[in-house]
Image (cartoon, rainbow, N blue to C red; front, side, top):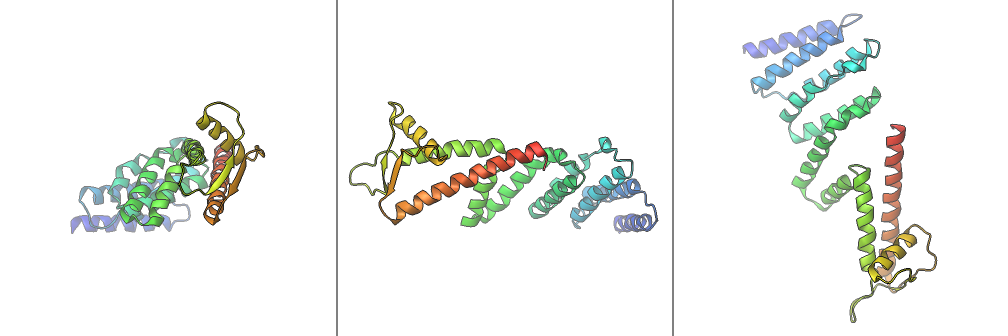
Length: 243
């Protein structure tokens, strides 16, 4: 009961401070930090999610009111508290923090939390394990950064090149392919042909779908490649322009 009363007193002092014409946001931040410490150390059943959001918000406001002195930005309190959130709260909070830092043009400071958010989203979708969630996991892995996008693109081209190799006899064939011979190794030649074909630089490579499945497959290949390529370019521009 004493701890509950202490927490209530801190909340009351926060409200009193915020009711002032020129509130001291640094003081508000400190009081939220006190509340978080009490709840964390006492295993309080009340969630710290809202308190952590408010502390993050007022910490940045306190810096804004110090002539934008963001060199004093200190996000260590997040590491101390974020692991005490449940999975859904953690994802929601880290998404909120990402938006908050972007608002103050401090997006680069989110890098240390990026993997934690990624890991949390993977864990959440893995627990569900529906086809939609599995697709989300694949999408998250591909879009983690520009390097994972590039690796996926290389693996995708290699996979399509394997599919475009001559099919064994009596095997269900989706399309006829006439490769252009650039080199002796058939697989490397296929990779080169497919890369040029996907990028629209090889009109000599002939791919003729033999049935509806072949046509659908070729359309899906094109859509996937174009989608990943656009994503790759967008991520590169986003990093360069700090979007």
